[in-house]
Image (tube, rainbow, N blue to C red; front, top):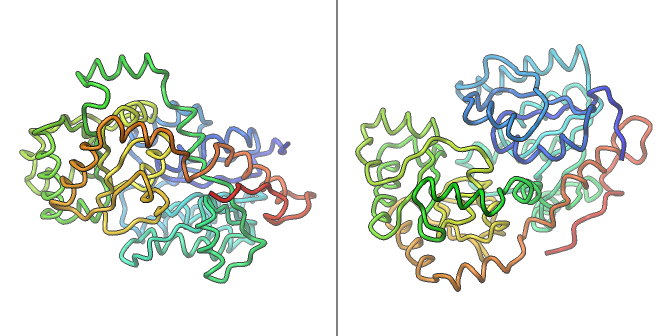
Length: 383
């Protein structure tokens, strides 16, 4: 697998999860990778410091995107990406997931007739209230090659009428990300000792999605449930900047008093905390995947999920309110036996070679390479 050393593969991203999930692919691409960061996550704690932690090359940064409403983000990124790709067109554009950055990259690739590859294609929540659902459906329609993480994602794409030859089941790149960046046991032990935590003796929580933070009443319900859990287990909350701002503006700061609030962590630190949490409570999509690799139980605080594979064994889906505490207590009651059971299960998101499969697909899309479809790439076996 060789690539030209001319930054000919544009990897368009804008958020922390995209950096994490595309890091290994960017390393495999080597000098051919042209990383373009839209600045959707513009906080150093969310993206800037992560570039150094993941040992990624410095990206091209767009301006005027971070902190803006969705429509402004997409419009600003579209204009600047189009200008850059007109002046210096890549051979292939790669986008991941369902962010505004991914949609912008897909639209510009389509407008400029540049082959487009969509990593993590075929996710569906069937919830039209989610902006991400609209993004992912649009990107899948535009992409030349659809990298479906699971056979279920492939089946959804086929059911929507997308051509079979455009789809490859690759697995999810999150599997290799977790395996690569989970710290060694002693480092994890030192981290927990520094926070006064006992392995399997605390709950880890994250909250950032608009459905849980934009309405003060909903946000209050989430925080009150987390506070109730502290009656039996400490709750560690790495506080997202957006969530902190919503808490302050809604006057909900006292609801944090019972929680162990910490700053947003680096990826390795977060994985260490998740690896030893008795239960994780989150509204994140990526954490639904990561817990299946770590073998930990998760309570997903959302109306819907685009990752039903995690719900089979690892996760419970609940709406904000008393159901959160009930689901957490149920998982805690399973005790060490429940944790051992999950640890023994394979992740439904693949075998840890997704990035290499995707890199092989990109090779087939480069000039003078044939064929330019997903067909030659080895597919992940059905789960």
